[in-house]
Length: 152
Image (cartoon, rainbow, N blue to C red):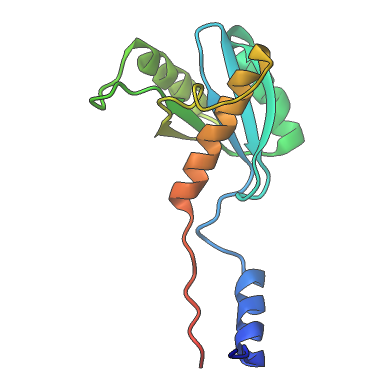
């Protein structure tokens, strides 16, 4: 078995200590629905926490309340695109909400088709926040870039 040199271990430690310009922190994901929205949060761009399910009409108020506590600046909306990639009426409503929030936040969109169907929960009231968690996990997986370490 080949041993890893001390220098390689030191390089790995230094690489992990260096702030990454690729990683985003304090992200809020929204699974937007006509009646309810699911919310999920990532404090570090790595782990994802389902937050809550809220009434859609109180979305702006809840986001404002969460901003102080979670200090997020980026919101990721899931867009339920059709199989051919086109947008439906709900996507148009989501983009309207995004335009309103763009004044104070960075707003991004990601295809979230089937994110709700992927959730497994015995509690139907929890599926929207778990769907938001799926949206955020997918967003982070797309952004993830593994560093290559070469021995010197």
